[in-house]
Length: 472
Image (cartoon, rainbow, N blue to C red):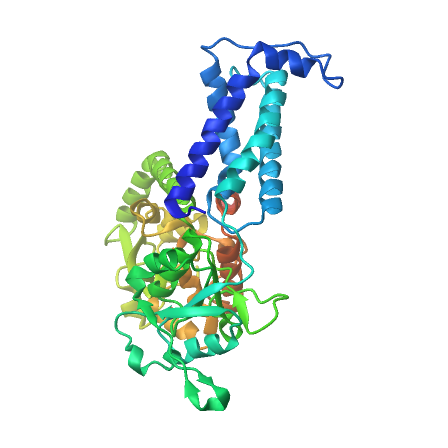
């Protein structure tokens, strides 16, 4: 089994080569005659294309087939039967997409005979590729403990029914004073030490050298980058990450029907291929939106200047991933020093429309959500995403944390302009409801879900804008 980037390159390169071979073979006269001789499709005429058109067919087929196979480019332990079934399902999905193109006037659409031959070739050869490079599940698991909380790691060791070969801890953790290095045996009279395999910086090397199947996570603060970095290392190599059942809510682990004290965390960090797609989506959306909205931005800036004295933009600190902070910008919708004048600590987003501190232009900007436009620049810089949990002020986060224990779970992903909570009209005034939607997004996040949320948010913006125009 190969893993990490070697797996991805082998899978992607091998799939691309098979696609090219399939298209070329499907365009040979012998293959065309063979397929048209079959009883079911003998009414089709052999149809080949010239060598100048074959590259176009390869590109068209490659884009659709590779897109369908995309989830398989992540290293995951799978059985042979599961691998074959999953790959064939994806090939058939791609074939459906290619067949759909046949109903449109597409210059590089595949002839029916070529589509049938290519699909048959890939349905046989593609599973062989992924079976040969797959990670093989084992009957006996090799596990390590990773974390910085000695007591939590000891509980994991006591609950685990697998071969734990050692532990990995941050450099600042003294192995001589961590309870994890000892476990009572023989009625509590003797101790057995676990070897320290290294620090967190060398975790990937440890996973590779010791051929680890399972990582048991024992962090005192799972909302920190060390915890998330460990998860990323596990998912990069297709290694299962488990936590103690008592920590399931804190780290977004699904206990469901799982038995025993250990449960698998379903907080799956996006690997590079998913992150690249999401980042590309953010950059394209923010870039196009800023370009299209440039005239409106100019009009808003002038209107704010004419409406009341003060800066055009309003800035405020918000909480980012893992509790870090960043500066968020909006078009100013209130009078200057509104909070100081009223003795309040509310942000513009918290003030109601009847608040006298809100300017005339500001009231219109809030109703139409146009005051949020400057945040597109934060998305472009990578400080925010288009879709994600809405960032709150640090002081508000601290206040909510005192009553909502799992609130920090929102910090596992980058904050966004909009999200499930926003399109369902749930704000920070309902922390439990907002947390429920944010955790649902973190569990199910995907580019498809992001697209649906953005479309819904744009629809709501249009509805609000139309209502304003009608009111006028």
